[in-house]
Length: 79
Image (cartoon, rainbow, N blue to C red; front, side, top):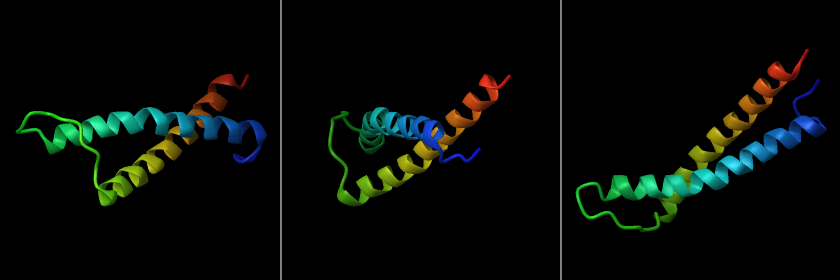
């Protein structure tokens, strides 16, 4: 019944890490589009300060993704 139990934790953790991995590349592209919107788009890595901001926001949404995945999986698989 707890969210942090074996199967539930694995579902949340896998969803969390998949979201982080996929979204990291998407956010890097969006960062560059926003940074160079009036110039020729190029690929540049964010500064350390910007990386921290990006990673914090990604972790919040990755946790939300994991919890929502768990919740909807639980709702649709219960009979």
